Length: 248
Image 1 (cartoon, rainbow, N blue to C red):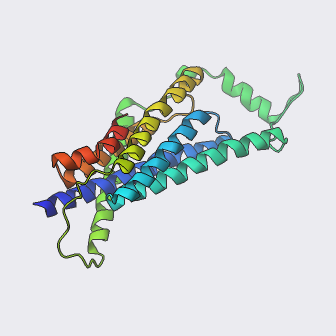
Image 2: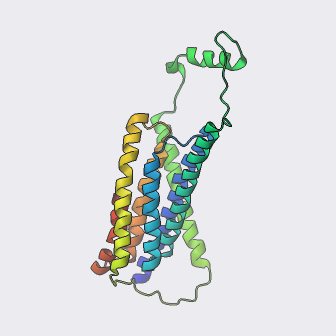
Image 3: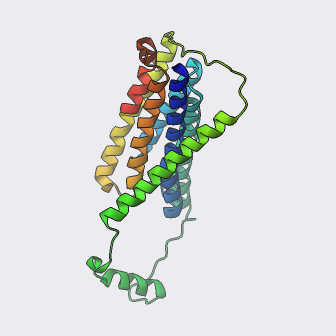
């Protein structure tokens, strides 16, 4: 019975990894294309990074599932990349390396003509994607990511493994690990507040719906990977901080 639960836990864990790989990529690419990271709150990234570091430390100390540790490493790396992008593009603007085309009043150029044409066009005449098309697009993306997670599990399962009988999850409560875990959960909860304030100011400019779709799916499968491993009360209490961090 535990073997079946361990397999389900691994499948959910790999799907969660696939989801979070997809979640961070659009934001990093968008920052690169816009040459700006001002859509994100710096306080949000710093507090989120604190939560990810604590999450990684606690997962290693507690000997949690390998997928949980891999996610912790990936989260930390992505937070670092986002921070580097924000400071790099700020430095680029301050040093004048970020060149913005400037035209004198009355000056006619190819760019000003294109801008004038785009502004004069009636936005209502531009056909936008239908709700059905958007739904199908994200449904296909979710299906692809889920299939990628299952494929990753199958590949890892085919690799040679010396363990013939999986050990039951450790239910021993370590207060050092619990302290780190609850610090991580508190950081995750608190990090959202400055970003919410930032979103009100920027009206969520630059945020893609896929960010929320895959974050919800990633959090859900991440929680299921923990619960599927064991539903023993002591085990769930031991992992309560990680589950709270997901729900925050």
